[in-house]
Length: 98
Image (tube, rainbow, N blue to C red; front, side, top):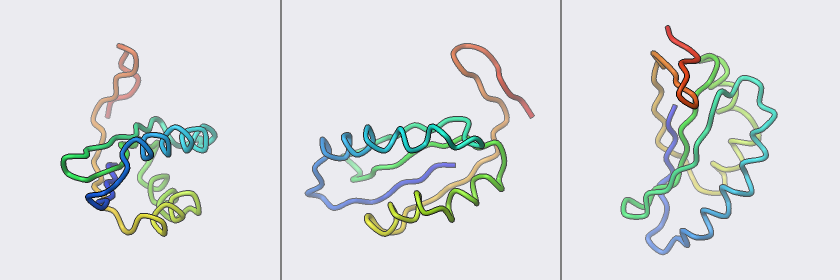
């Protein structure tokens, strides 16, 4: 799943990097989350994340969570794209395939 928030042209991108650093520990105990990366694209005015979930249900549960909804309230509705993960490599080792 990919989530992108469109932010204003005057966004402080250094501050958004700090937001990611501070939010990262909030995701450590989400058992169904395989991985998450935070990304910024200042040229397109986008901030977001790439997620790999154990299941589609886990992704839906996250999107309904207070953790996620709080961010939506602050930054507005994002663009969300979901994908089927066919294979997953972590640190050079295949850890999952369909």
